[in-house]
Length: 302
Ligand SMILES: [Zn+2]
Image (cartoon, rainbow, N blue to C red; front, side, top):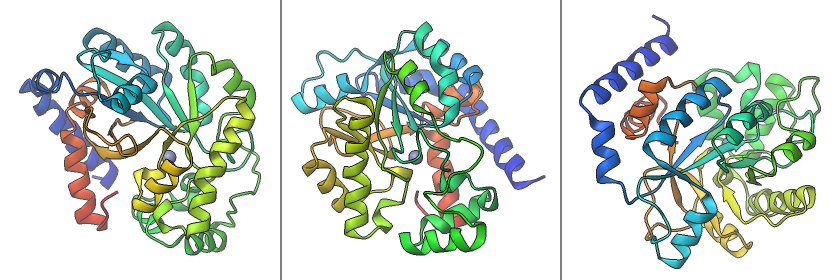
């Protein structure tokens, strides 16, 4: 069996066991006063609709702003039990197709975008066909930023500012259509791995992405998400002093009023998760298992 198919088979088997044992219901009950921030990337409308149908029956979908306000005030009285926040990273072009579902369920997800890739024909470095393998991507993520870019240039003639024929990210017309029901926030300019950047690069990627998006949309942007969920004390300091009110990581877990607003935890959801896998992923067990396997295979924790 191919590695991807085998991984899928294992994940689906684990998910079935988790659901059969009733763990999703148990987890929802014991953590009913903690808030889950779900993290998607390029989910299809079909899958997203199924997830929202389930969430709308069993959870209360709130905005990121509601959660961040409650954390800053150390007061969760306005946060209903079993609350979830929906976030979507990167600003993939396919996100526009989610708009009818977002309207149908009257939710306001937060979409974190790479501000020098949206509204251009530039590409995301992690979507280059030459580097599709998981092992290769994980290797690139561990390199110093300049080294990663040099390698991408050499092996795939990739440059962050090069324009391609195919458009991978949302454009401004699509974002304007979405703006009434989507909260757009910055996710750096080009999606580097921030801890691998030097001080100047890290500062520019974070602070200029805020300025870029504020100028493009004509509104203040106060929430950030770290690319690949990677951050260090330095990034927290830049985000804090740069005027952001929150930053979302991809550290697995739920949020309480004691969670640092600059280290918000998340529950990463597979963009292709069927309902069984989705319910299992809401318990975070498959992700924790996957992280453990990743650490063994690629010697990485992200
Ligand atoms: Zn990202």
